[in-house]
Amino acid sequence: MAGLVAVYVTLQRARINPFTTKSDYARYAADVVALAASEGLISTKIDEDSFGNKWMITEDGIVWMRGFDDAFANRH
Image 1: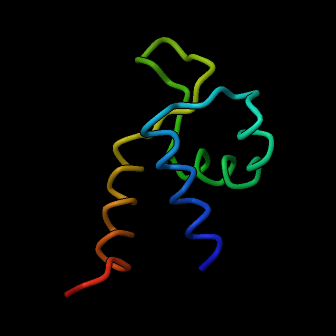
Image 2: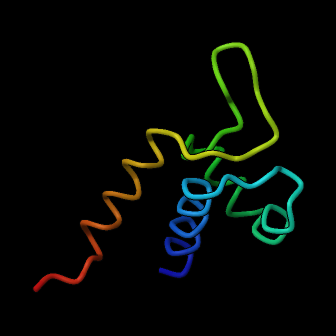
């Protein structure tokens, strides 16, 4: 469960305030960042022909977060 939460936190961070590839957070959470990038949940891709130096959430990442929210949200 801790791993899923770590992925969620990383995606949330990339969504709200994209972090650079060499930021303290990217270094601290290098394994989770690598996993999220490998799964296509975050990317540095800006458009078809260019890449930047900030990790940003992808559409797949947003879908993943929604799935997590649906599965683990408190229901009243």
